[in-house]
Length: 227
Length: 227
DNA sequence: ACCTGAACACCGTTCAAGT
DNA sequence: ACCTGAACACCGTTCAAGT
Image (cartoon, each protein chain N blue to C red):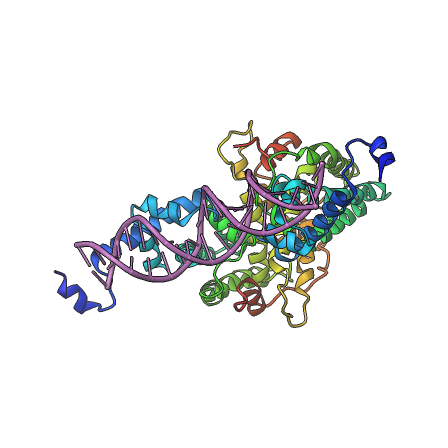
């Protein structure tokens, strides 16, 4: 019996339930990471070695489970952002953040699909505004202040550009077969670097035709109120 | 009776069948354009005013129907490419092509979804290689030859960059509600222009970390042999 | 409390029955 | 020939029955 555990935290799951929850998360990360969002909850449950019903007892639906995975990724992104801000050089910090963020996204098919347009959860996306947004904004603002990027660059620009590159990475992600010399898995970095050249401060930069979105508008766009 | 028609072209569909085919294509363009790839064939058939079975008599499956829509879009893209090549100014021709191509893609949710990563048909994608690829390659090669873009730019780069921007457009495509001042529908153009600055010839351009893919490799990646 | 798997609804696809 | 819609399989989700 685990009375003490219960007394310490009355909300804690029973140990077997907690085990199953973790097993489901692990299985989900594998299955969705490999096969993308179209993978089946039946498959996830099978890989986790539990019944489908158990998945639905721990997560109210498929989206909730994906959301839980997203939260883990957001932890990683937050770490990457903080590392970027810690870099004494504003440009290097931004570049390293983008490299790291995209490596995370490119390695997980489901994440890439979500970021490149497929809606998932409508709620719970406070994460972006509350946790990541101030950090990306700071990263962009510092680079602007030091004059290393074009003066009209914003944090939301970085988000949208990440979305674009992530879509490219999702397309080039090899589905099993080998490609001649070039490693297609890294191809997205070519476009990251082209975009970095477009971001860099340069008197030849053209004035942009459309204003950037504010953080709130971006948040609203990426996770609109439920239908 | 339509004996003459039959004699002229023995493969022609009966008039009612041809009508239904067109009705299905129109309905499909509307439904998929509005709601994206997740829209139902039942819905398309209903909007077209025919039974589901009819859809399956004209198109062997959902992918085939989407393919038929793609073919129409490819006609438009080809026209945009030819117009770009006809422009006496290499840079303007390329920019106008990209603007036009992205306007087409941004206006259709299904197209944007397809381009930003969701696989559709495995066959029939000879179109890209056979019809569009030589034209994009020529557009890029001319700009390189005239020294208006970075010397390492290829036609396949334009394709992948389009994919990225298209993903951004798909994300910002408003789903019904208004956004303050900025028109979110046009936001993708902001990123097109940032990318154009990254593409433009400039001695400060950084060497790219990854080689471009050849046309054949790109084709292989975008429409691999069947599983 | 929690677990399981049969059962239901929905959508892609097929096919027997109609014209 | 072509059209139709009921019918089947598959996957998301629920729930009665078991521990």
